[in-house]
Amino acid sequence: MKLLSTNPSRGYETIGEMEASTPAVVTEKVALAHKAQRAWQDLGLAERITLLRKAGERFEEQAEEMIALESEEMGMPIRDARADFAWTIDFWNSYLDQAEVALHPVVTYEDERERHELHRLPRGVAACIVPWNFPFANFVWQCGQNLVAGNTVVFKHSEETPFCGAWIEKILTTVLPKGVFNEVYGDAEVGRLLVDADIDFVCFTGSTKAGASIAARAGARLIPTCMELGGSAPGIIFDDADVPAIVSDVYLYRFMNSGQACDGLKRLIVHANKYDEVVAALSDLIQTKKIGDARNESTDLGPLVAKRQLELLENQVADATAKGAKVLLGGSRPQRFEGAYYEPTLLAHITPDMRVWQEEVFGPVLPIVTFKSEAEAIHLANDTRYGLGGYVFTSDPERFRRIAQQLETCMVSHNGAVYIRPENFFGGMKQSGSGREHGTEGFHEVTLSRQIAVRK
Image (tube, rainbow, N blue to C red; front, side, top):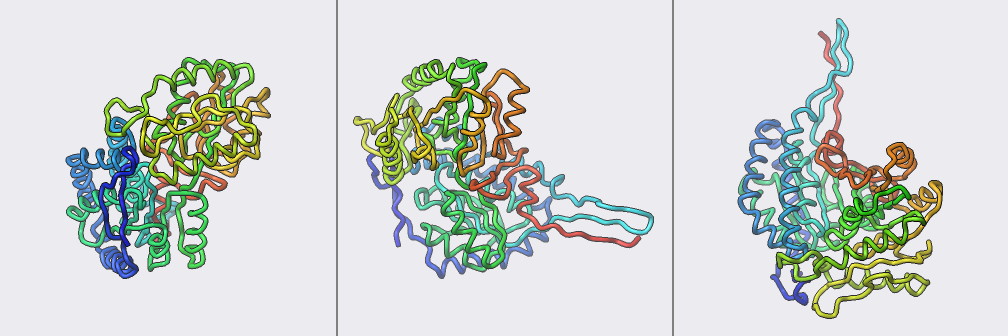
């Protein structure tokens, strides 16, 4: 089977082809990972960190190649791809800086006769499967802490971005011992083959539907999983919010990467007294942004990753308008471009039965609803099967803390504060997944605990 990589900015022109991994190749890569795992573990944390720092240096030396690939294969505007790469390298280096403390044995009990210690051990061979929306960051988030902790990895990138995956493999296999990092290529079927192979742990980022299927397959064999799944983050704007001060954050959290972010602000919940001001400010800001080819330095909004994503988004918007939604801005493909482009769109008159409210919307579309009381705002925010992040805009710190305690999300931002940092965990509740990435909790996710009791 051939994987065809296309450019969504330029009418889906072909970038290149690649062979998908066969079942035999998947089995071979898993076997290599098992063969290398004990030696990688026994190498010790300090030596692993030394090698992984060298890998990070190689990533930075060859950064422009990945930046160009992210722009061409998935349509991330080149300026955003450059910033995303720099931000992602910070995560890689932070994992290396945090590891000694996060993985150090902890004394849990001690008296004159005994000393009890909690140790962290690698899980073994980790199958890491990621989507296309942030090609370099998704790899770092899924594989970085696994490798530091002593797991070996079999990695599968999205079929939409195979050459981004190949860039990662090219660098790591020249720095790390054979079998420590292995890569397979293909679609969901190759992912299923990998999950069904002789692995010890599954890390997955992607849709809730795919995650549930993977979790069921792994669970049948009692294989642990770490799942970072879909999101439909609420953004609540209260009547005391400073709209001119927050409008750029609202725009960023919804329209960054053309709305293709799991934790993007996907439902805007605005106090009725602020509705007109918010809509006007957002509309004015959006109309200053330039849609265009992702490789152009002046582009603010590029295309979606593929035609199938464009068609899904169009179906979601069509469902909303058929049920009475009003298009305030955008609502269609820009006619002057050939590719997976969609205009940044604001929708009003939203009802709970609409797909744009019920489903994750992975594109530049923002449904807007109004509220009059805190209780109504909380109800609307929690009216979703997802529970990744949430955004609250208010000038009252006490109100923020009160609302944050009632939101059914694992992460909450106040007035645009960025909670995604390598020191903080990232993860969700409800159907947004289970498990944690980053920080001490992320290191504990990719390791096993061992209790040792020593008689003095």
